[in-house]
Length: 349
Image (cartoon, rainbow, N blue to C red; front, side, top):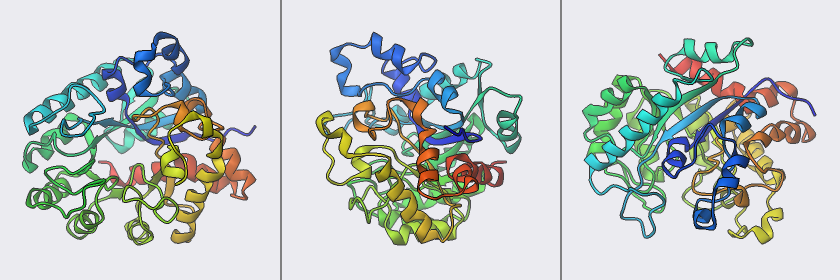
């Protein structure tokens, strides 16, 4: 099977998984051997440094994510009730990434030159771009600069609703704090991630924020009709802003009939992934605005991803499926990673 140049995965919850006892440096298969039935709520592990390197992944967007305690069933412990608690949790995750970067195989990407460094053919390192998912760890908007100086390059204001923005299953516009945050982010040089933003907040943000924009992990609402996905109008607005959209490889976001039971996993396949990619490409009129944002191990595991995948080592299979569907080699290279790299070379300092 042809192997393509490299892959960029624009959404992985690596620090959250580490907080649940999963060592990123271990392979997913090793982690499976270590886990017990009491770990089943995390999903079957799919991500480890060995799998990413095996697949040819050269860059990931690695998240800082603090779980709010007001969820019916918080996805992670500890969770936060106050902005300061959210800040403390995210700083702990930031420390984890800084510790990972002491490994010669891992680099934190802060600038365009760092992108070029990890993509050097003589390099065998994984680059990480730090992405804050849900902005509550920013205690006040002016603190955005502190996070930038600490290494964060992308901020998504929402997950569910936050103090800044309406979010998934929580409709609403940007709050007054959210409107202030847009200006601080633009002045600081942060990238805006609109994934999880409520539609009203999304359009508020695009009017107020004039810097670079992405949707790190979002699919098409016309195929999966929930507010977690992007409407055609939202996709077109992102294309107009030269954004890139990462396709999520979670069955629930790929196929509206899928239910969370392994018994029907085979009903979701790479063909469903291609439906979302093709729809976004058709709306854009090109193949330059779509990438991958797998969200692997983001509260689900191997039981909840397309049938052709077992671990992140299988990400390269998307290239073969695109080729079988008639996409050119240039288009495939762009979708697997080139579109994200072009964006980073424009958006990073």
